[in-house]
Figure 1 (cartoon, rainbow over the protein chains, first blue to last red):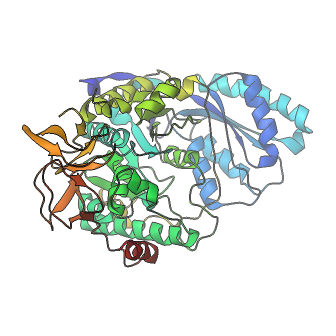
Figure 2: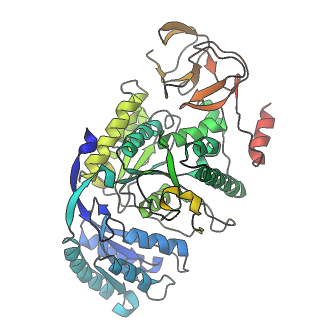
Figure 3: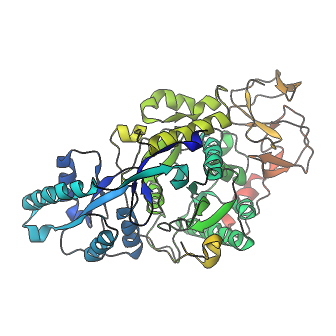
Length: 406
Length: 101
């Protein structure tokens, strides 16, 4: 029933629809961070949000992701804040945002005369951008317009029993209603590659999925990552594949329609695996240095909101797209209830079934899409992190339904 | 049932939602079964009679092969279940497997 719900969204020029109308203030190097943050702070508007890239050296991955972020359906306009001498292609970013029909201005601090005058110029520009963004066309939107990502963070022994499989049930319902769902963490899916490959819509895609997990294993081996710890066995996990399946269970039972990389927009509804592990030799360190780096990648691939399962109790949210937190552990929920949207710990207490909690997560997804604040939004969380990575484009076998093009 | 979670209808094991003491009677698919040993939260007990060589299904997916028989209610863990995953390309996991034996 709840799948028939519709609400008013924001229509963008590429045909995608947004559930929020955020104005982004984007700093292009750490040196511009303070000025950008001051502009956001003084705007004192939860829909004016900060995003940025800290590095001075250019990186094609970071540039491509920033373009996707700035033209995300939840974004209605942007103010670019440049110091003036960093390597980031500010003209290219401005042109991409302008081409998308969104209001955009660029503030160059060195040209504005420094910190104080830069902040003043930025605040003035922001007012014009906000006004233009508020004129965005409104349109009916329903579950089939949604892209939903999922990640887990702060996992414990309950995550794989309650919150992760409950998100899987929710994903099955969303995919059945023609939504687009994304799961990831190929590095934590070691041992699941054959099962995943069997769920792929073509054998060629199945082989690509197996290759992606093998790449993750090579990458983490170089970094010296351990996979199965004694604590896992104390918690009741017996085998490596059992542990991986705990994270994997977030994906549900639907067929896997494609394999994407960060920033690739899924070409149609269905379930997609995101390969987050960089290509080539190990170059910039850990693939994702924290949960928010993964959240940003799912947002760059178009996620309107992100389902975050946690056992130990993460508090994070995100800029741009609401984060909905599903707490796996009933004791954590009692301690941190204000930070959580759904109490999957009730499954541990046998007060609810996986199906019931899966339906509750789906109801929460639709309510938040229709404008209700998630817990992290209400608490003001707007985390954002983007760092250096290196990717090759996906091969044609990865997206069989789109002729191989994201 | 009361204390056991079934994650998938195809599963042949349950997950304990509460600590179960040795000698506790639990109802499994309509029959009373005795849990012979202490089983902590998050651990597995057999849902059906399992023979050595049987696949153990969790989330409806094989998580390994039984190395000994188990009756419904018996604890299923490293003493009677082993990984099927032979990661020939991951020496670290292989070494960990050898040192356990």
